[in-house]
Length: 374
Image (cartoon, rainbow, N blue to C red):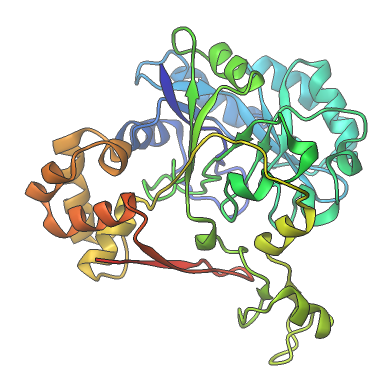
């Protein structure tokens, strides 16, 4: 089977996360979204583990994978996937002497190198790799020019692309050949525009299970990645973090990485960083499906301020009632059937499927935007 999988979210125990991020809400929106597998996020936190324990029986037909994120001594973030919470408990004990926030912060700061963290992770049998690897803050390629520069002799089991990159951004980096690329939401709220906004279609040999999901990732059985157009990400282009004026790499270097308009820091974008690291002909990667969340499509065609308006939510609910889940609406439901329900949304989804999209890239911390070509 193919399992739609989102393995990176956060809990209310992390900073700037909605208080509504609780298991029952997350499982409910996962069904609505069309996910089969959801990572718990923040599994190092003991209270968050306890919240999840009553929901591990797949009653909602969602396979729950214990996952977490840590920040190392150089501010690089690492994504960890485990088969059970016991492995995260073991990791918590190993990290405890090196962290002041291991039991209080959902995403703790651990004063160890990436290599030391990965070694401990492998000792307890979990998978690890860089989170949002290309993002210019708290990411592998923000601070290192190579995987080995961060992880030393320890191998990585996966690499998370982040919202500002798709598979093409890493396909030309030779040392990433054979490393599975993951696309996850990194959601901080349980809205359908956030959960599963990026996901993976993983091929499973047997029935849906945590072990099966992890084995598929180990063997690179990623059928496809799905998510934002990279240009929609907040850090896709090199730009000022104050006024968001965008610059070419050459211009930023000429200005010594300070915006001539307001003196703000110019932050190198993911697009330019990936080009710096790429060498030779890009390697083959699974297809990447560029999608826009259904709520954002409805917001755009209705010309309203937010996907959370009463009007948008009513239209969204009608789509779920008619077709079962959002991912199917975006990818597989015939446009003719969508048109019978909402002609404007049907035209937008048709344009999306045919790649008739104009992109206005983001940068410096400001999300990019899109417009659909009729």
